[in-house]
Image (cartoon, rainbow, N blue to C red; front, side, top):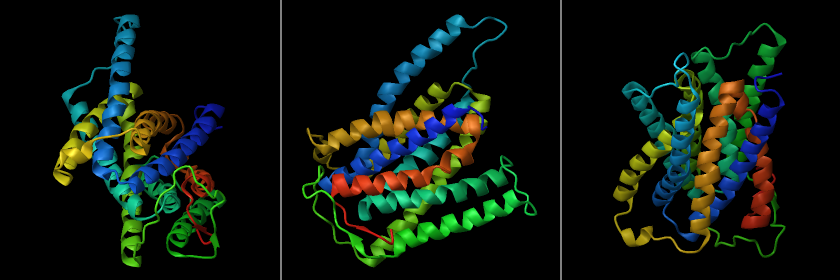
Length: 311
C-alpha cells in the first residue's frame, strides 16, 4: 500500500477528473477568443484570493495551538526565493506555454501530451534519487517497457490521424467554430505541450523537498499562486497592451477563470502536493492516462470535437 493508504488513490482519480474539466473548459474559453496570457493572470489571481486568506487563517490557528516545544515552521527569505522560482517554473512558464499550445491543438491532444509526464517525472525522480530501478528485476524491466510504451503512445496520439468519430451531441454545450491549423503549427504546438509537461513534472518533483522544509502545504501553495499571479501580470501586460481586451463578460471566459482558479489551480496544486508528499511524484502522474479517457468523452459531448481513432 502506498503512503496515504486508499485516500491516495481517491485523490489521484479526483485530480484527473479535475484536469479533464480544466482541459475542456479552457479550450472552450480560448476558442471563444479570450487571450491566453490574460486568462492565466486572472486564473492565478483568483486562486490567490481564495487560498491566501485561507492559508493565513489556518497558519494563525496553527500558531495558537502550537507549544513552545513544537513551534510552527517559519518562512525564511531563502524559502520565499525557492517558492518564487517554483512559481516561475510551474505556474508562469508552464501554464502560459501549455495554454498557448492548447489553443492551437485540441483538448484531446492537450490531455494526451500530459501522458508524457510519467516518463519525465520518473527520469527526474531517478536523477534526484527519489526512485530506484533494478534493471535485472522484473519490476525494473516492467518500468522500462512502460516508459517506452507511454512515450510512443503520446507521439502516436499527437501525430497519427485515423478514422474519425463524429460528435455524439448535435448541439454541444460549448459550441465553437472549428479552427483550421496547418500541420506545421500543430506539430510545433504538440512539442511545446510536451515541453510544458516537462517543466510541470519538474515542479511536481520539487514539491517533495520543499514540503519537507516547510510542511504547510496550504501556505506553500498560496504563496506560489501569489508569485505566479505577479509574474503572469507582467507577461500578460507585455503580450496584450490593449486593456479593453482584458474585460470579462458573463460568458464561458468568466466560467473558465472561476473553474481554473478554484479547482484547476488552488485545489489541484494542493492535492498534487499532498499526493506527491504521501506517495511520491511518480504515483501522482502515473494516473494521467485516466484524464485522457475523461477528456475524449467530454470533448465529444461538450465541445463537439471530431475525435480520431488514432487519438
